[in-house]
Length: 334
Image 1 (tube, helix red, strand yellow):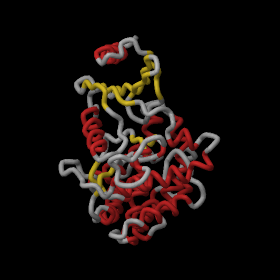
Image 2 (tube, helix red, strand yellow; image 1 turned 90 degrees about the horizontal axis):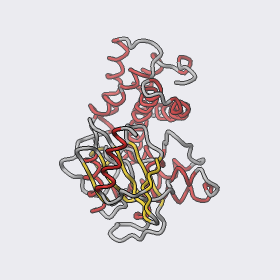
Image 3 (tube, one colour; image 1 turned 120 degrees about the vertical axis):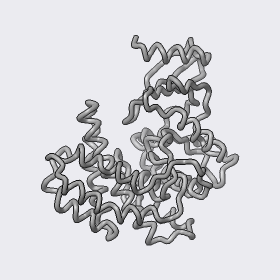
């Protein structure tokens, strides 16, 4: 037993779960580790987010914020912020990803995505906490620049990096010029749970409590289109034909204060930025962390990027790719 595992079990014991059975749960692309603890009919999830750099405190703060808004973030049973442990409410196994890979996927897909889109409409109408960090152009450019470090076949030339930054500057300024919303940032099928038995007490629209929320510790004040494109341009799964367009229209139909042309431009810009960041992250996970399975998703992410680059607002970024990383220059794994 490793020292970290001993610390996890000691934390569970202090929380009253010393006699529980520990079973690992599927993790994510970070250093976080999850276990399901069971004790008879009771269950909880142990989140292990080790220092340095752990985000347990931020996770707890955003969870409380979301719960105060009436949403289904997990309840917090126990916490040790110093060591990076939290014992959370167990939402079960019905993630959107699991359900959409199951036998009822065809009948459930539209319901799940409509519910998640409606959730975002409601979330983006909530006041943004004034002390949240801002997902601004500088931060977005820093995220996108990971692409240069990990997803190019040759050493990064100074001109390549300088032109990359220059190409993105205008589009990112445009995408972030609209009023900001609470942006959960990793809002996609793998982080959403389906809780159909929940009622809607405290929620502003029908069905919102059915969306169980996970992995929101990176929440920022940012452009509302970011979470919508995160949902609809999923790096790990393809949506049914026409569903992305239908959900964008659904969001806009009940958001009369938004300028549709500006929102669609922001959607394309943020979708492209997100795709570039993910390509970089997946390469880093494969090369640095020995997780090559992420490379299987890259063709899908490139398709998202190419579709977004067709928008006129991204003309300078499209020109950068045509010069430096055109399709013929991409390796099979890129």
